[in-house]
Amino acid sequence: MSKVKTLKVIPVTREIMDITSKESIKAAFKKYQPQLVVHLAAYTAVGMAEYERRLCYRTNVWGTEQIALRSPFLIYMSTEYVFDGEKGDYNEGSVPNPLHFYALTKLLGEFEAKKARKYCVIRALFKPRPYGYDRVQCDQWTSGDYVDVMAKKIALAIKNYEKLPKILHIGTARKNLYQLALQTVKKAVPIRRISLPVRLPRDTSLDTTLYEMMFERKDEGEIVTERDIEAVNRIKAGTTLKYAKKKNENRH
Image (cartoon, rainbow, N blue to C red; front, top):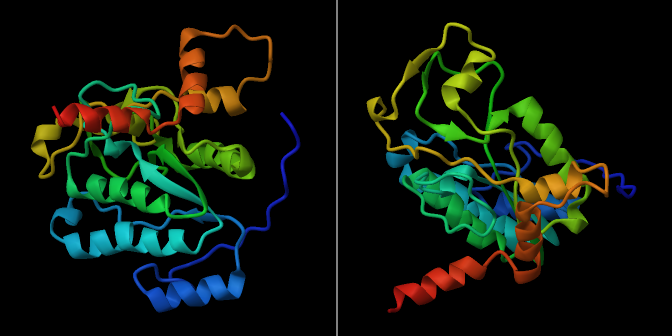
C-alpha cells in the first residue's frame, strides 16, 4: 500500500459545533476551515426516533445537509440499517429500503451528503464495549462489531480518503447480535426481535469485498474471486446504477 498522508485531526464536540444550529455550523467552519470533514454526529436512538421524529430528522438530515454544503470533502457515516434485512450480504450497489424512521433519516442523509464537493458514504454498525444490553436479539444478523474494532478499519479508510469510492461498506464477519454480545457479556440472554417495540431488520450483513480489496489484501498475487470482479465493476459503473434501474422499473 502506498504511503498515506498525515492528517491533523480536530475533534469537534457538540459544544464547539451543534449540527442542529446553522449559526454554530457556520462559526465552526469559519474557524477551522477543514479540508476533510468526517461526519459522525447523529441521532441514533432507534426506538426513541419514532417519538422524536422532528429532532431525529433535523439532526440526521438537515444537519447533514448543512455540513455537506460547506465541506470540500465529506465522509458521511451511515448505517447498515438502510437495508430491510430480507436477504443480507448487501453490497454497495444494493437498493436500500429502511424499515424504521431512524434508518430512513440516515438514508436521506446519504443523499444530502452528495451535496458536498466530494464525498464518500461509509455504511457500518458499531457497538460499545462491553455490549450495552444483557437481553440481545439472536435472530438479527450484522457485519457490525465493537467500536474499537470498527474504529481501526474506519480510520484506515479516512487516511486514504482521496482513494475512496462514493459508497463503501465496512464490517467484520457475519454474526447475530447475541453472538456479538457474548464476547463481552457472558450472562447475555437471547431474545427475539418481535419482543422489541420497534421493527428491526433480520439480516443487514454487508458484502465488504471492496474494502478488503482496497485495504486488507497484502499480496497482489492473491486469487481474484468472482466477488472481487463484481466489486471492481461496481466502482467502474458507479454505485448508483441499481438506484436508477429500480427507478425505471417502478415506472412500468
